[in-house]
Amino acid sequence: MSHILDTLETRDPQERERSLMHQLPQLVARAQAAPGWGRILSGVNAADICSRQALAQLPVTRKSELKELQQQDAPFGGLTSTAPAGMRHVFMSPGPIFDPEGQSQDWWRFGRPMAALGLRAGQLIQNCFSYHFTPAAFMVEGGAARLGCAVIPAGVGQTEMQVQAIASLRPDAYAGTPSFLKLIIEKAQEMGADFSSVQRALVSAEALPPSLRKWLQDNGVPHVLQVYGSADIGSIAYETETDGQVNPGMVVDEDLILEIVRPGTGDPVADGEVGEVVITSFNPDYPLVRFSVGDMSAVLPGVSPCGRTNVRIKGWMGRADQTTKVRAMFVHPSQVAEIVRRHPQIGRARLVVSGEMANDVMTLQCEVDDPATLAASEVVETIRDVTKLRGDVQLVARGSLPNDGKVIEDARKYQ
View 1: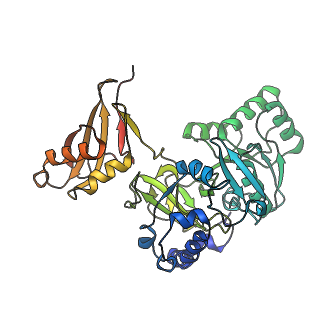
View 2 (view 1 turned 45 degrees about the vertical axis):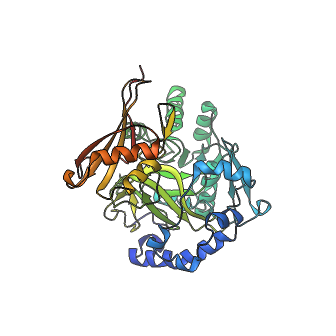
View 3 (view 1 turned 90 degrees about the horizontal axis):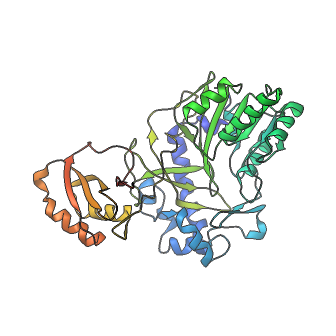
């Protein structure tokens, strides 16, 4: 079991779960001491939040709400336990949305994915994430310091200088987006420069399709692993290798509680079902309780061949916010969830919006065990009551809807 950072990664899953649930009431209490969380979690008895079932009763706070929260209570929406002056860095992402970084070592928890890549003390990393306003580069810096690696703060752009740095300084690894690594390799080939020292790459911030991973491997970088994270949480999950082969899925970080919920709701879905990623983060400076970054994924069954025992997810599987405009009115996933809630006979549902522009047709496809137990006309009335729009209903068999996390599908023709 090589490239494992510490014994936390290989502990018994039940031991991990007991530890997380034991810490959960303290986390909720710490969060409630911050004014923003105090409002969100008003009336919650922190001591009662000691199980996943209890956690699932708390509201989900979504990243899409941060801008408004931060405008009301600058700069962090009242969600931090440490004052801005006590932070190491304050970042500004487009929106703007402000993100903090505290003083503790490896604050973003990038040491684990970097160790999984095979990085170790004494190695050199060319860090090609942006150092401008946003935190990705500093996530790598924190992980590198924890492992004892040196960093070339290369940032983005200037591919010729990037190649010159690689040829002269001989870094062991690259960190950045996969598409920029491709550009650097192509520039090195064009210049006839020696790129061979870079044997490992930790990539993030954009998709890594199999074709691009294979291209990078075929062009001199055999070990390419991706980390899934966000500017609010840091590392959420990361890929691993066994005997040089990338293992299925991504292993969830040790200091997080992961839930997959039905988009637009806070209701956990069954393992394997695609839904919205919701994270509870045990960060002492920025505690996050049921926080959604707006992405979709699914739990992958079983344990990774790498020896790590934590839950795996399938990786990024699209965005959870499927809000759609129909006949000049917005329809939200939460409204679909409300329709389903009013009719217990319905399992999953999918609202399909079809037709030509300005001639929209809404059809709610509902999974049911027995069509005889539910009158479609009743659901039609509920659709009108909840959305203020007319919609058709199609009753389908259980398990017949695609397992892709979509609650609203926009199938209109825009030509």
